[in-house]
Image (cartoon, one colour):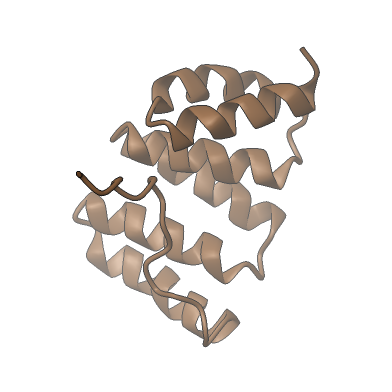
Amino acid sequence: MSLYDRFRRAEEMVANRHPRDAIQMLVGVVEEEPNHAAAWELLGRAYFAAALLEPAENAFRRLIELEPTSGWAHVALGLTLDRQSRHREGAVFHRMAAVLDPDQDRRPRLVPAQEPQG
């Protein structure tokens, strides 16, 4: 399976609430292509959805290294730090996000939205 196909499959896994399966696939993607920012973002989201907060933090920090002007990446890292009760550290990234992108929604969707029950 190509790198692109693995990435797309991992996107589907995260969307379908199978983050741990996505993580297994994405680790190989970022090992093969360490500068693939979208893969680092998706890997961070998958770790966050699986409540693996330290690896999520590391993935979002790598994303910020690759895309330092991404307001979304700063918010995602801030939320990950908040979830770990590291609010002072998180606040730094929330403030940076506000400077980088004043119109950015401060609560990016890190995990898929709940489907309406019907």
